[in-house]
Amino acid sequence: MFNVSEDEVQEIINIAKNKKSFIIAAEFILENVDQKLHSDTDEEKIRALLREIKESFI
Image (cartoon, rainbow, N blue to C red):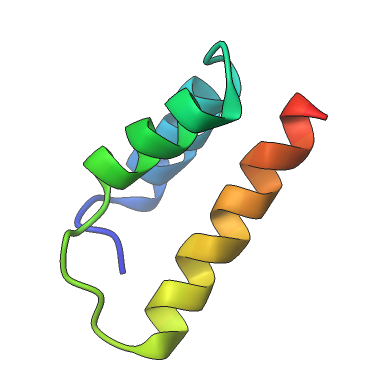
């Protein structure tokens, strides 16, 4: 799904959680993931990741 290593994914998550809003965090994540969704599973993984980030803003 991601066009980066596991460590880079974790770094992206940590940076996103420190953004000022969920929208900014979501945009940051989407800019840093592979633009092509290879399957519905990948799309669901991205949605789960965004839900995790959103929880940190609630």
